[in-house]
Image 1 (cartoon, rainbow, N blue to C red):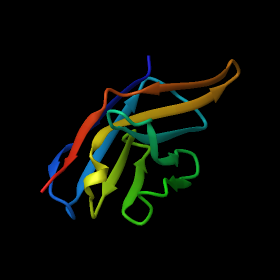
Image 2 (cartoon, rainbow, N blue to C red; image 1 turned 90 degrees about the horizontal axis):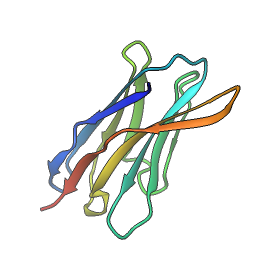
Image 3 (spheres, rainbow, N blue to C red; image 1 turned 45 degrees about the horizontal axis):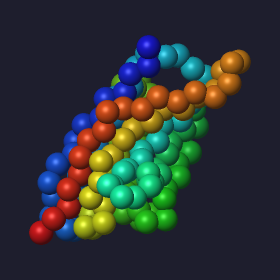
Image 4 (cartoon, one colour; image 1 turned 135 degrees about the horizontal axis):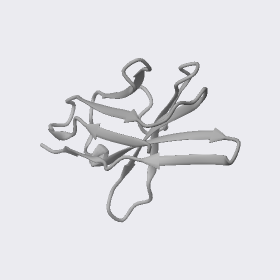
Length: 120
């Protein structure tokens, strides 16, 4: 069974920083990617960042480009999201997702989420 556990959320002032962690387990794949998404009540889920565990290629949403950095450690099966210069609009529940493709098709699994609150 695939399992993902997020941690690192909390309360931070505008301009501050947080580092989120996503620890994943339960699968063995040649290629997969791990992404961070966020959800605020009344808004659609937004893609934040994604990283490939095979070649390390990264991508970022426009709203976080230049402020957030995603990184990985395949040995530890962990992906981090370093969030700097946080803004009020970054307040959300942040979710980790792993996605992969095998002979039966595309699959994905979500973590339980961690809350980030940016407030002065």
